[in-house]
Image 1 (cartoon, rainbow, N blue to C red):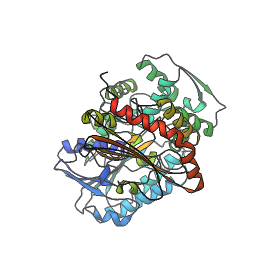
Image 2 (image 1 turned 90 degrees about the horizontal axis):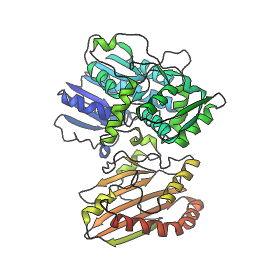
Image 3 (image 1 turned 135 degrees about the vertical axis):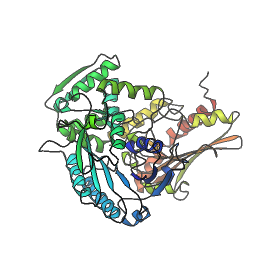
Image 4 (image 1 turned 60 degrees about the horizontal axis):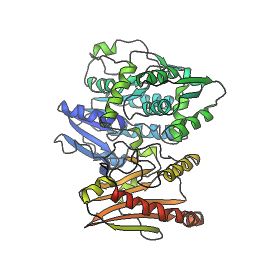
Length: 477
């Protein structure tokens, strides 16, 4: 069967793709930038990669006419708090208009549980997208989920950050709101089992796990699984704005996501009773079991996808990936070159930058810079990295974004997503028997020039210490 998979680089898409391939389907993966499509299945004979932008109707002409099933996995929750609903509706309408010109028979859409009369702007937008998709000529299957629990999911990572970092949590009143979390593996089961299933055509189903829990109970049950002694105190005085800042500063979430999450978490997301799981022979697992499986993936370093690797979790425009050579005019540079004895060891050290390994020198200064970035509304250092030693184009790396990760040609290029009066790049390349480390800063106005000169004394010893640390670090010592 020929299947169209939108959001193929997203959290859900990356996990659904291998399952569809295992079932023998030919999958047309829609991505905004082919360079970011670095799945291990890239060379699979049944994969076709289409570079399309759902906001650009002309680009959708690349979609073949003989597709049979389409997955719509496009959401804009990470974008700003104003206007994301307009973008979502425009994308959905362009998608429907495109499919009317194809042989597509079924659309599968992962939406959000929306059973309350008063919904958050995010959940209301999901419902409006549902209505647009129903205007197509295809059968539509809508799966509504609440909190998705899995390694790398935004909800799980926020819960993990809170419980691991805070022995006592003073929390907002909305932590008493009820929800019905579902394991990511169950979500993937539902998504692939509804294909051409006669019970699922033109139907909407709520999907959830085995328990209805408050967010407070979810925090405490996570603590039980991790054998941590935690206390959660809820106060009615915390406004939505304060709650958003609370999530933003303590966890790895962006401010935009924090605002949208807080607004959604004030609404109960509990499934309406149904026998859908039994019809599809799906056995939902408990919340605690979902946590155990997620932590198992993290410990085995097998996190397939993470919400933090979505472009919209930072400030980088998709177009920047088309230019893997940083600018040379109107920029300031700090270049360091040192001889290398063990090229493989040094290359491995470059590929392990950030996250738990840190930046090889004055990590406390990097952490302080991340703290300042958070104060000014930036992403900070909390995002870490998806894998301790592997890097893919598009990955987040603390407050950097990976533009190029070419291990064969021994070159890594990072783009700064921190708050800056300008733009910054950090480049590492191994040439012959030397490591070149280059910091590039393109200032914006007088503020950018002042920033460079004021921070230059710090750069002198930080960048010098970093390149020495990369060359001399040996994890066996």
